Image (cartoon, rainbow over all chains, first blue to last red; front, side, top):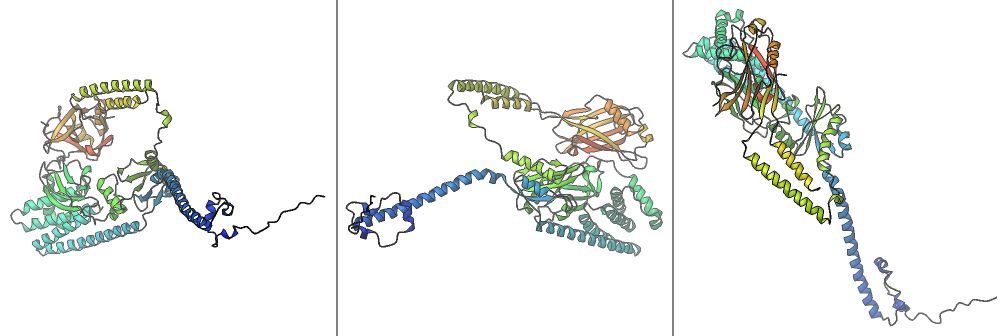
Length: 446
Length: 152
């Protein structure tokens, strides 16, 4: 049986005292593979060992810096990879056409497209409060008109015609402003204009007969079917009204010169666009645009003169009443500007319900996109956001398609490009010398 | 030849852009209770007119006159216009503002005989343009006695 003898060291390791007295720091582990055990070096002294340790510490700092740089590179690479997705994703403000417009499924559709929809939230409350305040103001005005008309009738009976005229003119101004687009506009203004005609007719100063006829004519324009109550006002007033009707001048085509150009123009309580023409004479004019101070007045419109007005921009103009009434149209620049201002210039997703489905429009920094339709709000939103996706995610052309290192192909491409350019230049010059054709208008009866 | 494709495409598009498509608007007439068979029956001709403006004043850019044969309803006038050579009016788009459809009691669409009229703003047209038509009655003259002169 053989015994294996393990030789014991004869003496303690002579370099054992060279082990540093301080406990090793954790970062030394990083460079463990670099150094053989210090005790195995030949001619190792305490001083050289300390110098080595200092060098190792410097190397450790460098290694830490390298690690930080590597982490920064990784972060940058990840950022570059995620950048297109971040640019594509948007936070959109969902703006229904009216407070009751259905929006179900819109948020889910936007999320599916990688976007986030935000509700109007406090803005909705603000718009509703504006609409409520406007309704209250209109109700107050109608109440004031009612009592004002009663006062005017009393003044008529007491033959105080100047008081009657002054009071009615104040009512006319207030009612014209408050009842723009209101269904009670024509009926209320008819009452005021008729009473004014009555007052001028009864006062009978020089020129009053003409003024009375003009007011009766305006009342006729406001409501062509309505006539004064003969039993109440007697045959003379009825006859004067008929005379005004007979003396009506023919309709003339009317031009508008209103700024902003998309302002809503109502003449005699009806949209100007619906009128076949206007007769020269007195007319009630009501002009309004979102973000602008409304203008309403009775004016004497001469023949062949355009309806001219310039609305003053008013940043405090409330759009709540227009929103609640469904009269905000983002296709109009003034409305769009007001919407974007309230949305703090964030992108807006406009959602409307139509007779044949739902309609969504994107209002972005560069303007409004074409409407997208769908059978549900979600479908319309998906269709609208698809246009955003298609414009943002244009896939890059693969590099393989580009011809490389093929001189013959490049030569042919160059020659073809030169030939095409020559033809294009020739045609361009030739066509440019022709008279400019701005397009034709063709009217048909299908 | 790959690089030449965009050039050829641009050339084709450029050539296509040199000949703009005409703006075609289909007229549709809508009447009200004022157009009774008696009043319509008095008409002998109907004109379709296009108004523009010259230096801020309205003027007539085009007038097409079609003879009608004692129509009793507006649909007959529309049918007569439909039977006429299309397009009813073909003019340069620039400067056009309004459309007028006027009915005359005499042939030739002259002056002082308008008993039917309808006006519409071209800005309201969206492929189709609805022209609301009214007819004159004995009590109230609705239709214009004069229309804008022809543009210079």
